[in-house]
Amino acid sequence: MYNAKAYSAASATSPLVSTTITRRDPTEHDVQIQILYCGICHSDLHTVRNEWSAFVPTVYPCVPGHEIVGRVTNIGSAVTKFKPGDIAAVGCMVDSDGTCPECLAGLEQFCANTTYTYNAPDKHLGGVTYGGYSDRIVVDQRFVLHVPANLNLAGAAPLLCAGITTYSPLHHWGVTKGKKVGVVGLGGLGHMGVKFAHALGAHVVVFTTSPHKKEDAFRLGADEVVISKNADEVQKHAGSFDFILDTVSDDHDINAHINLLRRDGNITLVGAPEKPLRVSAFGLITGRRSLSGSPIGGIAETQEMLDFCGQHNITADVEVIPIQKVNEAYGRLLRSDVKYRFSIDMASLKSE
Ligand SMILES: NC(=O)c1ccc[n+]([C@@H]2O[C@H](COP(=O)([O-])OP(=O)(O)OC[C@H]3O[C@@H](n4cnc5c(N)ncnc54)[C@H](OP(=O)(O)O)[C@@H]3O)[C@@H](O)[C@H]2O)c1
Ligand SMILES: [Zn+2]
Ligand SMILES: [Zn+2]
Image (tube, rainbow, N blue to C red; front, side):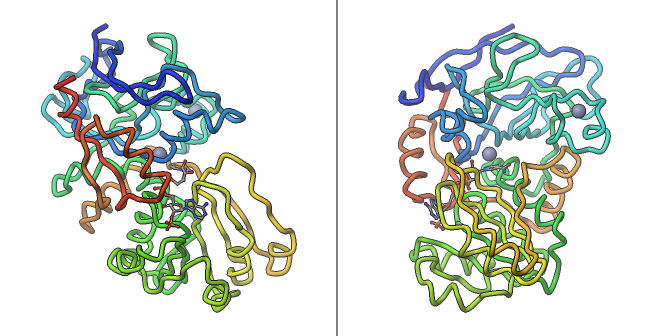
């Protein structure tokens, strides 16, 4: 075991502060990574503040972070996928049983025994896993990914959660050229959803509560932008969408969006608000529409997404910050004041 520097929260109401954590020495299948960048996902904030307590209570101290890009510093004797010096990435999962039907199908995100990157029981050290707001991490090679060499690393980090979480449902629901796709919420996930839907050739409509994001939405690949508060503007799209991706992190009226789906259209929730949403049965019944959810994506699909990003030169639009600004960044995230993902430059931990 060895010590690593990190930022952790001591309680749901505490700020993140500098700390030291323990990491395991690499076992034969492990890759040890020096973390270069870690994105800030809204899920980090939900977890730090214990907003998902009804589903998965937060264990403190909590070290969040699951959008990790770094450099391999050491490998176990059985590691074949990486060598020291390689660039490597880790997303929301660090382990799974590898034997259940979900794992065998490459859908580790549905495995009952998945170990999440933070706030999950740590099989090696006991306690809970600690995430990427840290200078080092050790992960089984099965859960470590390759980053295409042409991608900017600060912008690539958010692909590991915001990227795969939007890429996966777009594929699952058959978004291709000619489909009309809505993206609700232009934050970290939303802006990746727009980039992917545009790259897949869809007609993309962004629904935002922030009028000042309109120009950016067009630049990111939207064909149309609707300010969600303007009911008339929203209503013009009634019954027209093949697919809508809802990335909203807080309570909102989902029925307004369900009514925009065509017959048999689907709206998928990737946003995970603290409180349950109210759904009108009529919106679903009248158009035989469906409402789904989608969690991240499997490891093979995550690599496919990264390779797709390499081919299409897609990264997140990031604001790179030192870790000392993480609490301020959380405040800005809650005000929808980020363009469009914070990426922590982990070199800033050296001074702690
Ligand atoms: N399913 C999964 O596997 C998965 C993975 C990662 C994250 N998530 C969840 O996805 C959600 C979004 O994450 P994120 O990192 O993209 O967050 P984010 O950057 O904060 O973006 C959320 C966006 O939602 C919109 N919004 C916020 N509050 C709203 C409200 N009350 N009504 C309407 N719109 C509102 C804002 O967009 P506008 O300013 O454009 O309106 C905001 O930028 C979070 O709940 C997160 O936990 C789920
Ligand atoms: Zn995330
Ligand atoms: Zn499994």
